[in-house]
Image 1 (cartoon, one colour):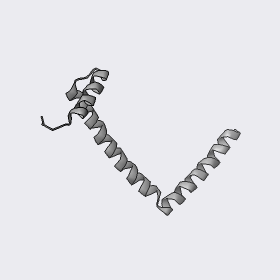
Image 2 (cartoon, one colour):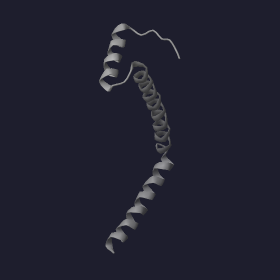
Image 3 (tube, helix red, strand yellow):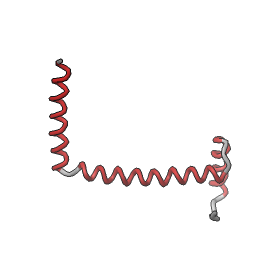
Image 4 (cartoon, rainbow, N blue to C red):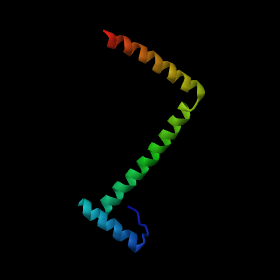
Length: 79
């Protein structure tokens, strides 16, 4: 458990949102914090993947792979 200070207007919005979802305040805040933490993790993963695919050698390999896949698919479709 933790204790935090939250402005009254924010707490009122949290309570309203929790009630609309049929949850108590604690569960609602916990769920929102979990979603926030996951979004942060997802952004970091996306950033790292983007960095890999931004490398010229990786981009060239992706093009080669796509071209080879297109050739194979064209042969399969002709059958």
